[in-house]
Length: 167
Image (cartoon, rainbow, N blue to C red; front, side, top):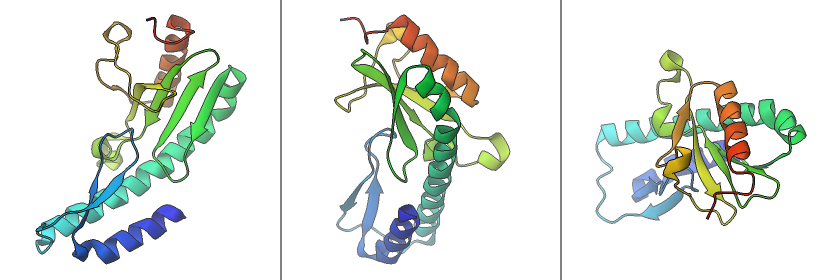
């Protein structure tokens, strides 16, 4: 699995001051060399290692969610876009320039053994940008604790805005 390879290599080069910057949970992860970053503290490495493990867990759960809903959503007229080894997938519906980005974000899923997984949705354009719309309840991300709740939200959004967000 590519993510395991990436995880292993990041840990091996962590001492070269590489840190992970996530611009947004729904965006791709970027890596950047940071000068004068203190990597000698044990807690830094422990937190980093823990976060990378959480990313791997969230990616696997996202893949499971995607596989579970894929057939039903496609049969219902949705279009799904999944990226390899990612904890995010996109859902669009025909005739709409706006869809939804579904995420299993690592920052909210650190204690899944105790609390279960959290799914997040955010309105997403085909131009790969987050779209905020207060009237649709998206002044921020929306969170769901079950797959059924997330699917109900997709159906609600498609019914409310079949051609995308009204201009």
